Length: 299
Image 1 (cartoon, rainbow, N blue to C red):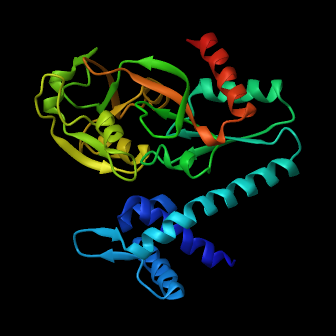
Image 2: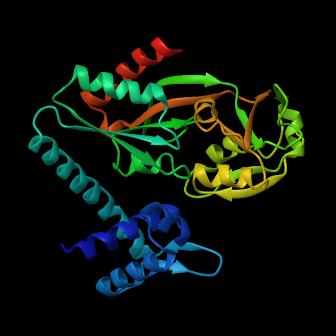
């Protein structure tokens, strides 16, 4: 199977999941036109259309459904076999890939260092995952576990250690009227267009990061949307809106051009280590326990 054929299958699976060319492209870090090109090539090999496309929607054809039913378990088995061989090649210790969003919290970095000391036969990698796609890399087995912002309500994902519970923090330009406040109530967010997240992240997660209404039911104006944390902070600095961030991010990115104001009345910002239940192993469980140990020391 050539690399081009594998990419065609990956494009097909991504589009079958997302039913949207743009989101499928974001998931694979490819352009929308490249996804379309790969799909046409695959349909040419098959000799039939696998998706019905209109200006309003994308859906699988009966043949596309048939291919998905047979391809998904085969593709997952192939990825699993490659992962097992890679582990065997590296010895019993294997490889642990830990993903993080935006900022690698110091507790995560400390946990990785402690984990390396405790388990020297295990290789560890810290991998940045897209701010706009917190769960995709775990589902696609690009990382073994990931530290993500809560909430998490994904089928198949296990929530391990939960930590860093703090009030959410609003990033505003230093000249904003709210910048000098010690804190503000969630009902006051009606004066702040909130910068949202675009991309493959599920709606419930995106709404948790940029709620459309206050707890009292008042509308919060929507600001621009971003794919990365850096984009969001840049837009705040350009006075295009405000951005809700977690406490570690506010600590890390404290800068004179921005102010970070705690917000009361919203659910706390919480980080959690998650992994796919089909990928759970001794290394992942040991890292979750190590992270819990590190968090207790620092909180």
